[in-house]
Length: 250
Ligand SMILES: NC(=O)c1ccc[n+]([C@@H]2O[C@H](COP(=O)([O-])OP(=O)(O)OC[C@H]3O[C@@H](n4cnc5c(N)ncnc54)[C@H](OP(=O)(O)O)[C@@H]3O)[C@@H](O)[C@H]2O)c1
Image (cartoon, rainbow, N blue to C red):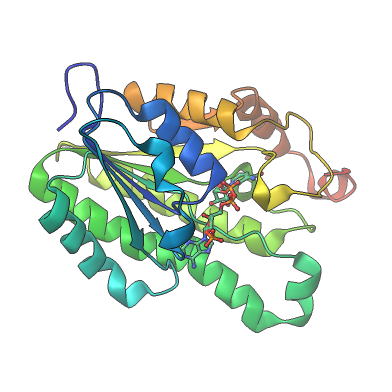
């Protein structure tokens, strides 16, 4: 249960090694936080000790976003072992390479499966639990790439567009249940995912995303753009005529 200061006692990070996800947890975790679960493919590499505090339980659990058939039982087990889930952050994702996808449709499908299908199954399991609890906040890390697909990464962009639409709809469906959804829409972030890539305008760091996301989560916002200016940039970009949009260096 979150306390009066909106400080969660139990936080679950799915994509437990994600730089953005961990930056959000860094900002959200407080003295009130009793349990942090890091769900990731290689729990032994989760560096769980980073979150250690007296009286706090830190657990690294095996979680594979692609193994959708296990997601419901994973969430049920987390609840059986740690009690109610106050904040669950869906931060896993793969960017992939559009040029590879163009020649390897199976690889494209695998990326979409993680980014979209995996996020849908686990989010539905989390939402069902939060409905039962009557409280809880699901945080979904989307991307501005889903706002308007670009030729340079349209497989990734389309998976994020689907995820974003799903998460917004789920948030609306949870109205009145006590549970809620906060969608985080980062622009280009200097993380492991983008290492070696050319930076984009308004690029930022996981730390800044973590700060803005935590502020939005505490305030119960349904959507948080990081940085905030991207909301206005995309208001315009979304409506740029296609012949011009195709020529933009983005
Ligand atoms: N960086 C950006 O510019 C940017 C911008 C907008 C949105 N985002 C989104 O932000 C989220 C976090 O990305 P990041 O920047 O923090 O990059 P990151 O550090 O590379 O994080 C990606 C995470 O996804 C996990 N993952 C990938 N496939 C998985 C699977 N099958 N099962 C479980 N976990 C899996 C990775 O785990 P492993 O350690 O096992 O690989 C890693 O923890 C992603 O959803 C990404 O799409 C990133």
